[in-house]
Image 1 (tube, helix red, strand yellow):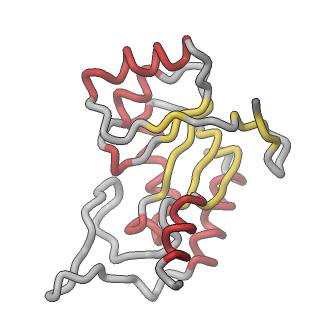
Image 2 (cartoon, rainbow, N blue to C red):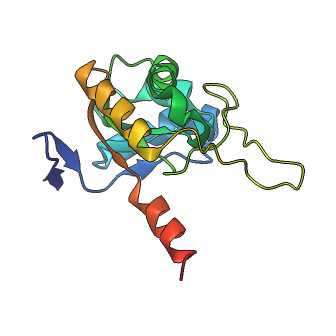
Image 3 (cartoon, rainbow, N blue to C red):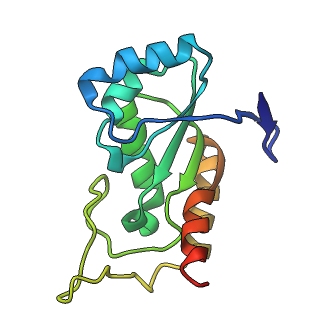
Length: 161
């Protein structure tokens, strides 16, 4: 079952997340997931297994995630993930967290904390700026579709209740 995105591309409704999967188990896991029908795989730099995922992803719907410290470096972060995944393009690239934090280096998913251990928010990078850079990825042909990861929005909204 798939849904049609606003640009006409179809995305399988059920995706397989590879968070916390060890690299050595990745090929068998993805091969078996494809055998039972999965065609959508959720990947992120923070999962630290992109090279292993890339080796096993032929024919699948590939989703990458922009880490919160890379909002000011969208193109570079996307290209870094694509290189690790060994892909020419991504089917979908999502903003992992719609909050920009202090940049710690492309491909580095460490979170910058202040002296009190509080996450350092980067107020110089707006979500609008991030979104325009995401749109540039589509124009450049690096990704087919873009979005914001809904589960994270729900987590953030729940903190305001």
